[in-house]
Image (tube, rainbow, N blue to C red; front, side, top):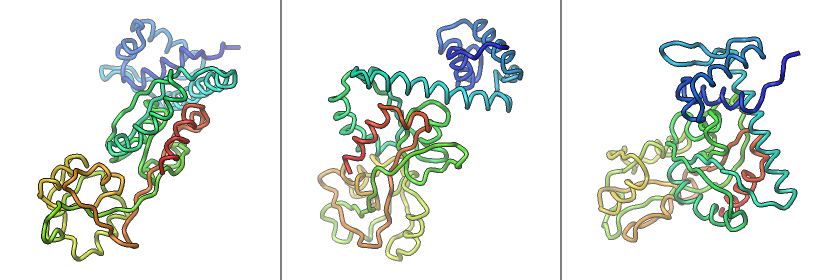
Length: 289
């Protein structure tokens, strides 16, 4: 009977997939390339399948490799949960590193107060926060790829059900109109928009607003948008929490009962969703709504 796979072997599979080559995986893990190659060959013998296509392009997982990597990441996440929960049950402080992926406005508005409160109870817990644009797979894809433990997302996220993520709602909020203070007719101004400020709900609502011209200025993110509105370059329709960061010379106006709404939530792999660190962060995020 073949030996079971070890956590070290699973981490090497994860690193090779993430980095795209044995040499880059070795650098990430502090190993030699030969040690990584030897480990992968040993794993392939144990599971009875070729896991990576090797070539000048680097190392790309085969169909069998993708399956092994997916299950291996799940095992590693379960080991993390085991260690966290055992320490929590014994009354020890969390000393892990929580990896969070978030789009910029969530990272700016939701994470700082939530992490401040979480750190007060778990001062030894460390954080890595990645800012990821909410386009395509967005922040949720960071969880699928194993680069984040939890992702803050606009719901519904864009990944298919087979991605296997679980999650929930953190915040539901309306969109509001913002415009420069003192302008005699703010609705005559051009509309400023940014790529991430878009969903099926907002598209449908925008299409019914005859007074709202087509966006004439498109910017990289909402911080640039707020600055442009403050300088009188246009008006914008943004989520309420985005408007909370507006400069003093930007005015907020409600859009009424039919205003579109944004739902912010979180997703995580099923194993890590049960971890102490993720559950504690979710609790603090929800307390802000």
